[in-house]
Image (cartoon, rainbow over all chains, first blue to last red; front, top):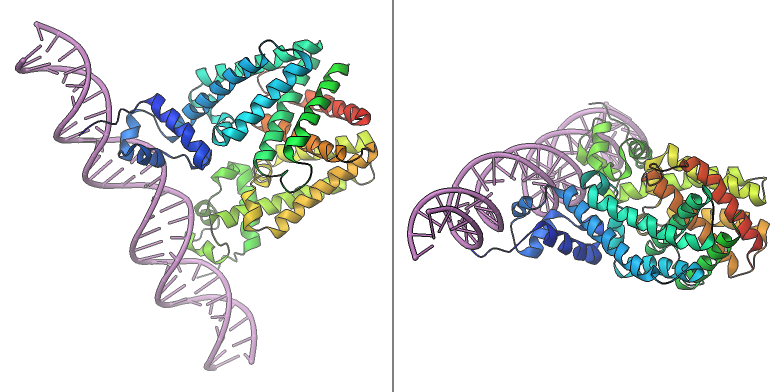
Length: 190
Length: 190
DNA sequence: CTGATTTGCCTAAAGGGCTTAGGCAATTAC
DNA sequence: GTAATTGCCTAAGCCCTTTAGGCAAATCAG
């Protein structure tokens, strides 16, 4: 019988794609086995269990997102960098909703640790790099990291959940104005 | 055999408490049946299915939170009202993490609709009431509603996930400073 | 290239959650 | 007190997870 050529990495990758199609919560060891035309038990040679699979998907997504964010921020500063960074997150969430959800699957930290945590650190560093254009002192800079993270993540989460779709203006119109407001705020933060 | 005295409302209430203990995702028809010392199938006379149960819990939580928010905002305006409102959300999430998570279980809208949606509208109205202290024109007021919602919800989500627990200052220290920054921003929003 | 070892996928089986169907007993209504 | 209703029960089927043990394909030694 021909082998399917599975591996931890291929499962994580296929799982990420599946997450975008059916939602991260619906990604299951069984569904992935069906996708590869393979018995469910066969996947357990490559992932420890369901949590491990989800953690791997989360790590793939968080790393991919960090790569895109790094590219977007490179060579920009201030307001320009802020918009570029914010847009990367929002665009990623809109094109890859399952993967975006996966990035927040924080159980990943306790299961895989290492790579997931490393990707998380890259994100923090990128936000701090953008904030260097606003010269803030500690602890204000940390407050600002948290403000940006909260607002961006919060907006994306609510938009993905459809919270903005039943009222005017469109979610896409409010977005740049809100990022601009944050830029103004950062510029004048004591 | 003595009856347990179940009802949709009691299940929703017990489910909410269970959510705070074990996490909203772990609230299951089976777990709830165990809690009442009753056979699993018995719950199906009171809730349509698992989604219905979760939607009821979400509605209980969203309504309870709206009540608390309304009380907190009553008689306050401007910065004062903003802090009071924001604190209600954060405190609720910290004391009732399972219930807070439940409030964002938006599948609830499509299952139960009515009450859940009504509670959601109350939240929007409260935020708009607070914003009346900052006189903003449309569409800026809507942008501001979304900014506040995003930042507050985002911060709470990240804090609950432990994202702020491995760095200084504490999540409790950044919070009032971030809300103050939002107050300043709203005061000067074009 | 052949034989031994490793590795990949398989079958089998057990446990748990969800859900429906149908029955008996406790409660409520008359 | 009897009849109608309602509440909880047993039984059974389906899906997902996970472990154990086996056979065959790939890989490695000589």
